[in-house]
Image (cartoon, rainbow, N blue to C red; front, side, top):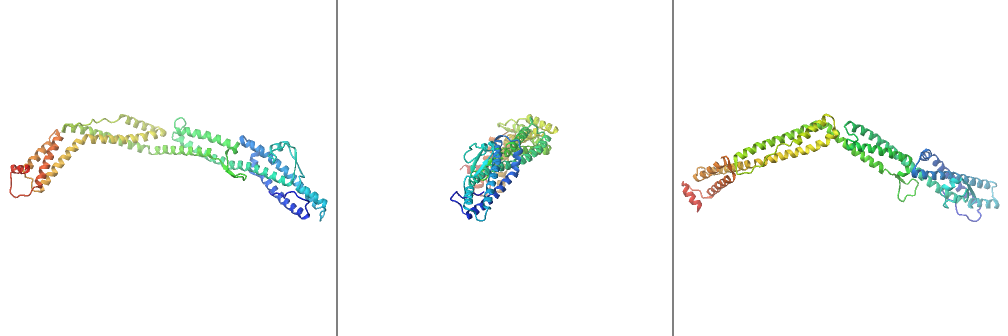
Length: 444
């Protein structure tokens, strides 16, 4: 929408013709804009909606502004028609005609009569005078229409943008929510029995309330763009919608986990029984090994082996019961807990077996070390050395006797090792010597 030039001296014919052409173009642009606003889908929806809150307040003001806009436009149209009639009286306008045209085109010659409600409610350049009629110049009248049009269009576009975006998205989310509720019910996720069931009820209530609020008060969900003065500059506020969409996604993941439990429950229960059975067998082996250690190893403290935990077996029986009755929501967390506990129990059983059999492992290591040195001595042709045979037989008797004193046996093995090391490090001689000679040489 344009604005005519400032008032001045009496206009000549060329100035009048240029002004009329400019005003005619403005009139056509204004009429096009007003008709577009009148036919705007958002305006029609606002006109028939049961509004509340800030939208109700702003629509009352915008509706009055639109009514006043048409009153202004009618006055503008009448003034333009009058000016054209005066100019068309004669080809060469007289001075009296030019004076009249100057007053009409540049002076405050336009009178607008409007309803008291529209004038009081709609914004005015003077802050609202409450007058039933006002006089304007065409310039001022165009400015007033520009202002009213911008504020009215801003309100209509904002409401229409929210209505175009949010209700449809809420409906789609509600449909997804309904499908999720049916799936949740099929796996036993119900309100009062599972947190996800309670979340679904809360999301349902929130979405219902949100849709009602969006329909009745769309401007409450409008974010104006910072620094934007253009009509409709902004976007719908989807914060509440996004929060519920994320909550529903969390519930879907929870239900997917329950579904996975339903599909894999039998295999997981079988694996749990196997792990606990292996733990029991390992503990039984540890108890047998403890008796063997106590019988074969002397002067050794052997840790006590505990029995299998009955609590895990009871929980396993409960899990099987949940599976039989399709209580997947209860089975899911129980299986996760049991799987971790079963692995811990198997690890504890293995650690117990290792601790119990440690003395036997020490004895086996000493036996292996003794035989390894004997083989080394034999490779060097000293297998028949009486001194080494004596030391070897002493260590062997200790390691193969029951109960075996590991500390004494270890010392015997070390004595054999030292004796073998001394002989293997001495110069080789061809003369056979007796044990006494070797012992004397060794001591020297």
